[in-house]
Image (cartoon, rainbow, N blue to C red; front, side):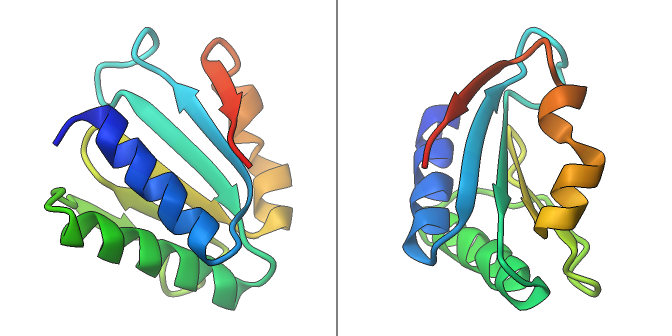
Length: 113
């Protein structure tokens, strides 16, 4: 499964259960670790966890490999590693504090929803 398809499935899964401020960032020219980063917000820690679980479930159903998931215990920031695509689902306060979009500022951003 290619990066574009993984990205499409992940974004659709986030939209399915009302993920907010979904941003897709192309980082191929900045790192060789992965191609695309997706950042999304949930309204509560419960929704953040639910969004990450839904993304992981939909990607697995489609046959994508999931390397791992981090942050599920606190659910302020949950990372789903789909190898070529990294999905960050964050509580708005964590997202504002870490500001990944600015950190990866040289990347090409594309707001999705």
